[in-house]
Amino acid sequence: MIFLGFGKYARADKIYAIEPIRDDRRGHGRRTLVWVEGVGEPIVASRTERTILHEMGQQAASGTPLLDQALDLAERVAEQTQQGRVDVNDLGRRARKLLESTARPGDSEPLF
Image (cartoon, rainbow, N blue to C red; front, side):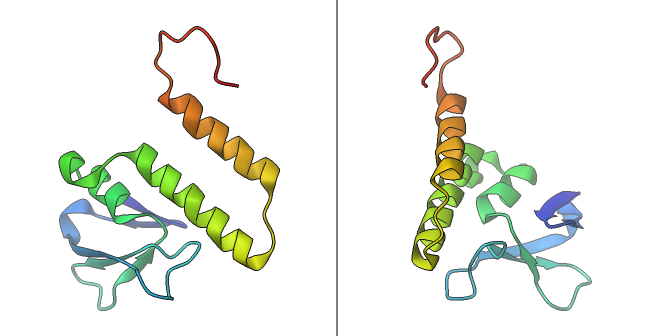
């Protein structure tokens, strides 16, 4: 089973197409259209196509989860800036978490 976000799951062997949403329909919680065998309309997933591909076992084609998290953070910053509601503390926490996850295990000094 592949988690698509917001409590939606699909069997990996039943997914036959995924498409990133690139127009004005894309927004928080609307990242990818997923076509599933037996379902007439595509399911709107809140996860990126790379993350879905990664969970389906397509690591070489999917990039890295860290990249997906960084892109999600950047998209949230852009959306919240346009709406005039930027939570700097939340963004700082997320950025620190991303940066700390890239630190090598042997690094003795914390990044922050």
